[in-house]
Length: 347
Image 1: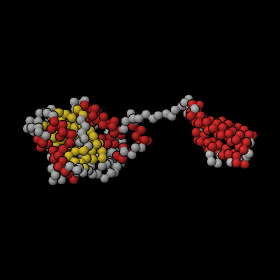
Image 2: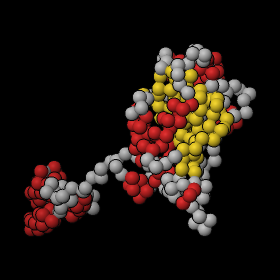
Image 3: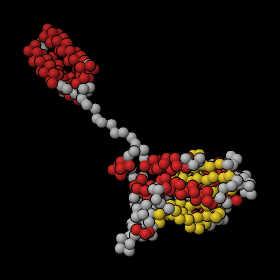
Image 4: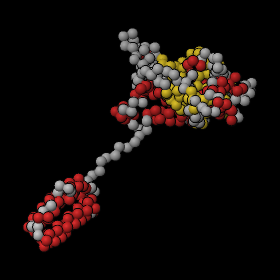
C-alpha cells in the first residue's frame, strides 16, 4: 500500500511540473482530488484492510491528499505561476491612435473661416419647441413649407408646455441669440438637424448643418455676398466663384440659392459635350447653400427693431460641402463606420 502512495505522489509531481496554465491546474485537481480520482480509488481500499493497516494507510492517505491540495493552491496563487501566465517581457499589441471624424474636422474648418471674420460660434440644443423652430422664423402652422421641415415630435406628459420636436435646421439658435443679445451680433452655429427625408446617396433623415447670421444697422446683401465668397475661396480654392439665384425661404427676403463653380472640372468652360464632369454634370456649377436677408418678421419676433437693424443669414449642409470637396458620392459612407473609408481622412 505504501508503494502505491509513493507512485501516486511521484506521478502527481510529474504532472504538476508540466502544468503551465490555470486550466491545466484545474484538470489536475479533478484528476487527483475529484470523485473519480486515483486518490479516491485508494480510499475505497480501506474497508478491506485490517484495523492496524486501516489506521496507518488512512492517515498516510489524508496526508497525501492535503499535500496535493496545498501544492495545487500554491501553484495557482504563486507569483511564479502568474509570471508564466503573463510574460511581461513580451511586446504589447500596438494601440491604434484615435482621430477626428471627417465631418467634425470639416465643421471646425468652416467655423474657423467665419471666426476669422469676427463670427462667434454658438451651438444650440437638438430638441426645440415649435415657436423657435417654426413660428419665430416666419413659418406659421398653416405655411406649406412646413411639409418639408416637419420632423420628429416628442411626446411630453406636461400638455401645457406645447409641442417639442427634433430641430429641422440650426436656425432656432439664431432666434435664441437674437432674442437675448442686442445687435450688433455675428454668429455661426453648427449642429445636427433632422428631416423626414428618404435615405439615399444624397439624403439622410439626420445630417449636419451650419447656420450663420449677422445683424447690425448697416448690413446689406453685399456684405452677405462678400462673406460667402471669402468662405468659398478659403474652404475650396482661391479660384472658385459664386452664383446667386433668386429663391424663396420664409425666414429671409430677398432670398437666394448659391452655387459654387465646380471644384472638380474648374467650371463650365472646361467641359465638353463628350466629357461631362460627374459632379456638376457639365453645368459648371454646384448648389451649396441657401441665404438671404433676414425677414423683418423674424427680427420683430426677436424683439429687434426691423426699421433700425438689418441682417443676413445663410445655411449649408456640412455633408454636402465635404462630399464636394473630397469627391465623395454617397452620404451614407459618413455613418457606416467603415474604417477603410474613414481612415482616408485621418488628420
